[in-house]
Length: 125
Image (cartoon, rainbow, N blue to C red):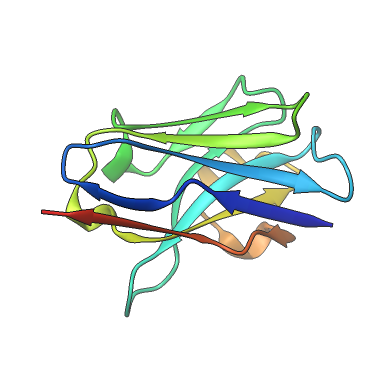
């Protein structure tokens, strides 16, 4: 059972990237999915979460209006479209899966039982 994150890279401030997280080994179509990030020297922080069918989403304030989380259950994949990127968005981005969508409690990393390996996003000024 694995979550494989991809799509990271180097981009200039104001640019866009689209991260993907593909699940293998079993289907996660009924699971909530989330993205977290960790910058050097900082704790891992919540970015966004989506429920099993994409009908409900939750974002941390700093990315609202710039990032969009979505999913394609037929492909067992969750996405994070990141627009208007800022240098402070630089971090390793991780995807995670939880059996239950928790809405405003989605930031609680300990609730997620499956994690991907991370993909580096670097935003230059």
